[in-house]
Image (cartoon, rainbow, N blue to C red; front, side):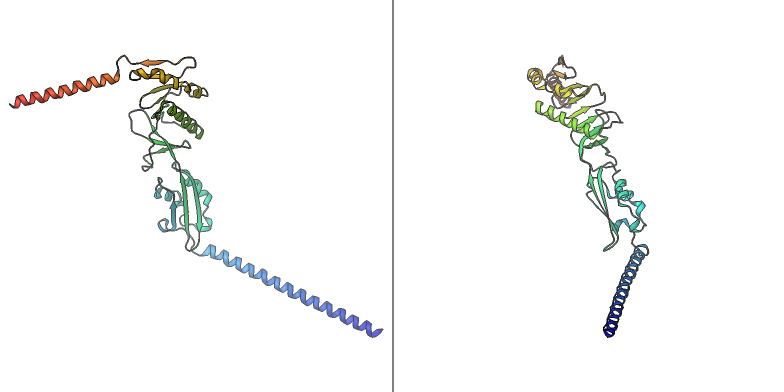
Amino acid sequence: MIMQADRRREWIKSRRKQRNLARTARLRRQFMRYMTLAALLYLGGSAVVRLPWAINNTDSQLTVRGNFVTSRQQIVDKVENSVGQPLFKVNPKSLEASIAQLPAVKYAFVRRYAFPKPHLLVEVLEEFPWATYVPEPGKPPDSVISQSGRVIPIKDFPGILCPPLRVYGAAALKMTPQDVTQWAGWCNYISQQTKMPVESINLTNPHDVIVENVALKLKLGTPDTSLTRRLGRLTSVIAAVDPMKTKLEYIDLGLDNNIPMKLAKIDPVKEAAKKAAQEAERKKNEQLAGREQTL
């Protein structure tokens, strides 16, 4: 019995020793893993901080895509503050907000790359022109109104497309995306009824808005919620005034009860033809007089 008890104690001791050895080996492996991870983190942090990973030359380290109207230099000016900074300190969100402040840029996306060499990639989505803004009739275009209502100066973005639709208004004219959508719908409605595209919208007087195309001048009054209903009467009016359209100066759709129209006392078409004939006769007489003097 004593021999069995001694053997059992020896066996228990050997098992404890094996467990202690296994625990020590496991702790040693974990310690080595942690030390290796700490060394890698230190080396990685040192590489990020100490290696020359910075944007130093915008000519070779800046790529710009999607800028059909916005010049590369305008975008370079917006990222100039990031030149010389370590790449990890460059804030893409801040650069995106800065570039999106350009009137012709709707959205901007900035990406940082460390390999194969440090560089920035800027992709822009530009505004789509909806109408050309002119301060008043007879003056050259000043800006372009985008679909989002932004006013884009032509002098700053000379390559921008100027749509055929012209909008006249005050210098401080502001339009929201909802305004552009509403006016685009009204212009399409007028074009469908008149079979001619709208050429201009005069917003100089907000209570007496004037819309014109090649043949008609429409006074719309105040562009409120009743304008769509008032425009619905245009088809019947056009059919009634078709025989006298050469004398028609304008159609007033600003009232709810009736539709006033103004006719010119003199037919402008016939008057223009008469003036042309008189000018041709005058030139002919001058030519005959010149020949007689020569003879």
